Amino acid sequence: MSGDVEVATINTYEPPKALATSPMDYSKFQQRFKSFLVKDWTKMPLELSPIACAMKGWTLLSGESIRCDFCNRTINIVLPKKNYELYKSHTKVLEDKLMSEHRIGCVWKCELNFPDYFITMEFEEEGKLEEKLLCNSRDISQHLDAFNYVQTFLKVECLTENRADLQAYAEAGDVDVIPLTVAAHGWKVRSLMQNRLLHCEICCRKVPLWNKAHNVLDLRKHFAWCPWIYAHSSSTTPVVNRIYTFISQQLRIKRKRKSKDYETSSQRKEELKEIVKYMRRSLT
Ligand SMILES: [Zn+2]
Ligand SMILES: [Zn+2]
Image (tube, rainbow, N blue to C red; front, side):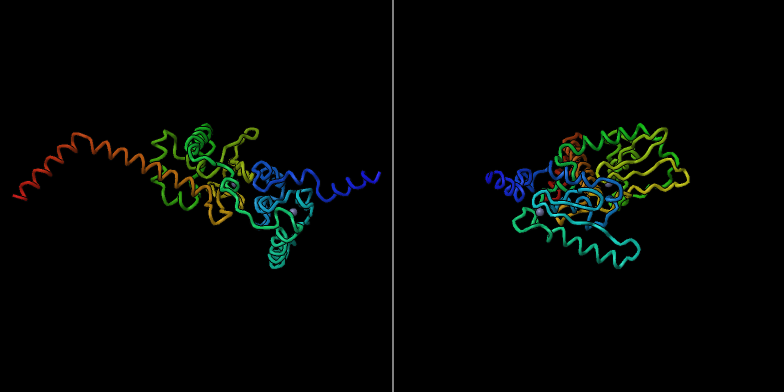
């Protein structure tokens, strides 16, 4: 009988499920993150975003209550709605609690450095980036008519400034520049009844495409914490910027290859002969 009591006591402090939790387990991170993808939590401030909470070991329990699976502590996340100053100060207090509320001995009691793909959630393999980007662009191409009324696409800065690169990359990949631009901002097109909308698979933002009164489409409209537009750590960059860096690298490689072709071309050989002749003449 006393044995049963002892087992119950031990289980209260160290449940087997908690012992199995490893901070570096990506599938557990995904489980915690996905628990937050419910109505309203996506609109939380950056400091208490689904990613910020998941990175510090918290899972959404219900409503406003979050729990650590390891030490079983819970925090109620309630923010005042009307007073902005109070909202900011409460946010700071709750942000600190994400770390301080863990019990001593909890695996989440210290800052941890996660691999980049925990935060960017996609594109863990650089080799698959091109395939994914072009494949997604081709899917969006099926819905080109959904963008007919759009006159201006508001883009993330790196893609606004480098339109020519985007155009050149689209031509090289044999896709239209509009679907490529939309895909490079992290969107997929979904159908809803007769209508279409943009959808982000990470932050779950939905942007309707059927409101023809709005001829300006803001492609930056992810939730503020979405890794497509926000860097959660000093070692990561927003995914949009990463896509642009990839595009410009690919273009450089392609141009280099072209110039190599030129180096070995007969035109180049003729030019070299002329240069050699000129040099000889100058030396004599
Ligand atoms: Zn804990
Ligand atoms: Zn997003």
